[in-house]
Length: 582
Image (cartoon, rainbow, N blue to C red; front, side):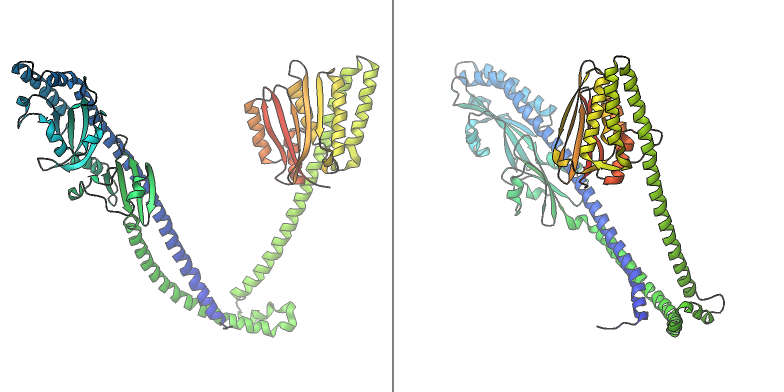
């Protein structure tokens, strides 16, 4: 193994402590900045695409509604022109043609439509260069594939294609069938919209310069794109099929982030592609600047570390020599370096003495704090024990006082039950008793309360006897049962029921006390739950649930304690969780 002298170790350590954290900060900052930048860009793209989808859908829906409205208003007149084309005077045809043309031109002007034309079976005299009506026979040439939709009504969309004026348009059309023959199409209404109108929507809502956003149809042809030369062409990409298979959402294809939205009016999709390298261009530039700055700092740090290590190691060699000489006199080895630094001792000398003094002082303080905590816990337990005796004795005497006026026999039973209760409760001063003793104590307490309330309360004990040998903190269940009586059953009209259940659950023992009383109310329950979660003692609160919970956490661990499972008009259920201690 290569031996490195202390000076080199110190130099490398100082250099590492200065340069490595700096590089860590640089790369961490780059990572955080890049993550935030990507996340913000993705959010921005998502918002943009959502706005584009809404605007495009509104535009397409407007065109569809125009087609529906026009065909609805023109239906009867077109039917008449078709059925009566050879049985009426020419003036009738011209009048109908005038009215239909006015309808078309008004709708086109009101809704900013590029062009509206009708391929119809009407008298030949209505066709002409400036007419809105075109011979039905020209439909197959100008609108290829329309036969697939013959007789289905519509609307149907035709993807982008060059118009007669040279601009790219896309069209929506609806078909009209004869009222006498449902299989015969007598007219096809076609509405053209400029592809530029959709491209303008994409441009106006695109706030991410790096994102390339476009619209493709169900076959992958461009319907709208910032590059007009691509309109009507296929999107040549290996991710086309995956894109067409998605309704909406986002995906990462290689180094590109892709956001997709399906347009509601048809099977077209808005696609926004943002290369991650373009998104991170700014953060990459920042990384380069940061690394350049880090290189300058590293050079300065190396120079400072070199000079500092040289200064420290020179004095440490003197200290090491002094320590070697003082091996036989360990008690005085600190004093031996005093002649090396005459003016009050060397900094390293003072550091060693200060460290030893601090270590001894800290150890002393830790031991003192441990003793104080132990004494504090013992004091709290003793204080709680004294609260238990006085608190319960008061309630027991109250029960005796309520019963002794009725008959001496009941009084004797209460006194007998009370003596049994105290015999179990005192348990020779032990802090923990077997669960069997705790349940026996609750049974005696139940007898006393049954006499007190004159059979107002029914009791049910369903406790797995296999948990009886395990120990529980003394006086855990009695305060819970007492709360069930005084705050639940006593306020209830009619007879009440208190149920005590217990058993194993995993590595823990759980005991539930349930009543069908009036409950404590939502606000009271939430406040009590917050206090129970703290797990601390509460002074001047008597021997209540809060202090019982604190004792359980102190003796069984922070995972144990009391939990209120429910408390409403149907009653209250409180659960006690303890560890399996024998």
